[in-house]
Length: 137
Image (tube, rainbow, N blue to C red; front, side):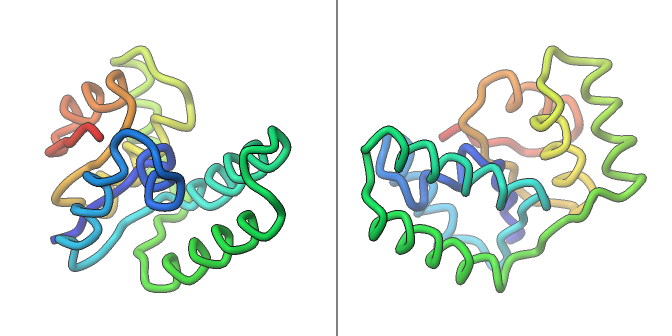
């Protein structure tokens, strides 16, 4: 089963917070993990924010970053293709979304994800309208 994660959901794999257990369960069920090309910089940005806020130290930052980099070696990473951008624009025109959230939806559609996992209610609703099976974590 191809499980696509938006950045906020996949970050829960490394940052223990509400929804982490669900994300780990979806990762275990997945035969393939799908991510948008924008997921890596978005997740690293979250790690950097935690480090700046003093919630993690430099060692924890490096450990989390290394785990993420190892995990994405086997992931299906969707580039920003014309198809992804077109689907993103369609989602933006039909829903109240941020641009990056729409790119995740366009990427999941392009990868033909079996499940779209998100921590964002508006994004989940928009993904459902785009024909994706959605799970909120």
